[in-house]
Every structure is written in structure tokens, then in C-alpha cells.
Image (cartoon, rainbow, N blue to C red):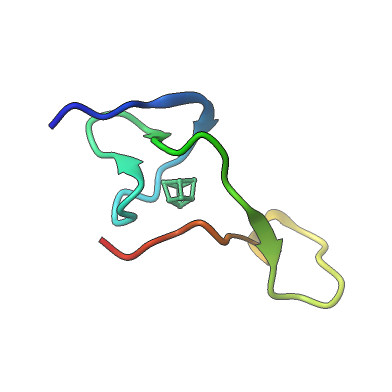
Length: 54
Ligand code: SF4
């Protein structure tokens, strides 16, 4: 399948519907990032809110 990789958004979450499986990029033009923590202090505290289960 041809995927329109956005080379400004690198991503390795291959089980996301928006991921270009053969390349580690997202296909969306823009993604929303958020946090599930009250005071985020490391990268693990952040989440891609544009994630869609494949
Ligand atoms: S929506 Fe988020 S998790 Fe999904 S491929 Fe794009 S950047 Fe990765």
C-alpha cells in the first residue's frame, strides 16, 4: 500500500492506523500530542493523541 509519509513526523508505533508501516513515519499532516500526567517530567509522560488502533 502506498503511504503518504510525512517526513516531519517520525514515529515507530506500527500498530497505529496512521503509521506508514514500511517507513517509520506518520501519514498525517499534523498530530496532537498531550500528556496523561499532571506534571510531565520525561518523554514517557507524553502521548500521541492522534493514535488510532489499527
Ligand atoms: S498518529 Fe501518532 S502514533 Fe499514529 S503514526 Fe502518527 S505519530 Fe505515530
